[in-house]
Amino acid sequence: MSKVLYIKASIKPADASRTTRLSDAFIAAYREQNPEDEIITLDLYQEGIDFLRPGGADLHHPQPGEGREHPVLKYAYQFLEADKYVLSEPLWNLGIPAILKAYIDYICVANVTFKYTAQGPVGLCLGKQAINITSRGGGYSDGPFADMEMGDRYLRTIFGFLGITNYQTLSAELLDIVGQDAEAILSEGIRKSRGLARTF
Image (cartoon, rainbow, N blue to C red; front, top):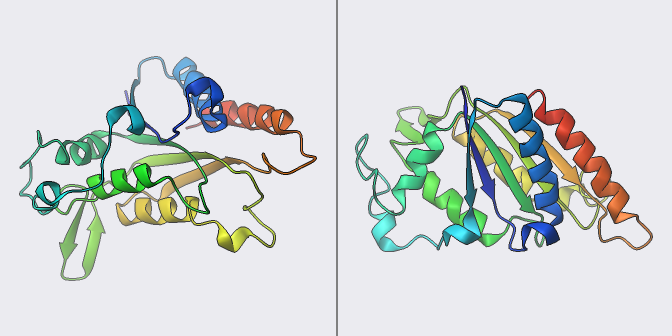
């Protein structure tokens, strides 16, 4: 049995969020395929994730097990104990929502999710897998704007830093481009998400 951490970073209600429609479809299909797995939903806005404060930063090099109940460090332990990760966020201003970056600052904790060695930092979240599900108003997967996409690129890099290299991306794009059929694009994205869930 696997433990899946479903990390949501959409400020809109579920029925109004294009990103959530994609990721919820993935989760529903995954649950059908893996009924015994535990799925933990972490909605960052409902959780009230805040920017890292001195009290949290002071414990960012704990001894193993230290600070497990700390209101910030508990997220790093929760992250470490998961087997799979489903990220769900829109592309905002070419990057990720600030609340998701704040969460990344919570989980990147030395001696918990990575460690420093004589050869440099080494991730401690080995053998895990992740999928990032995102929606974008424009086209950033390829073409002239591809180099501007810094959301999924950052997440792929930071997950790799933590030792998670089995990482894939599902994006629905062109949703705000005049003349594009956004509902058709979303429907195709939902179809793809269900397909990916079967092998995740």
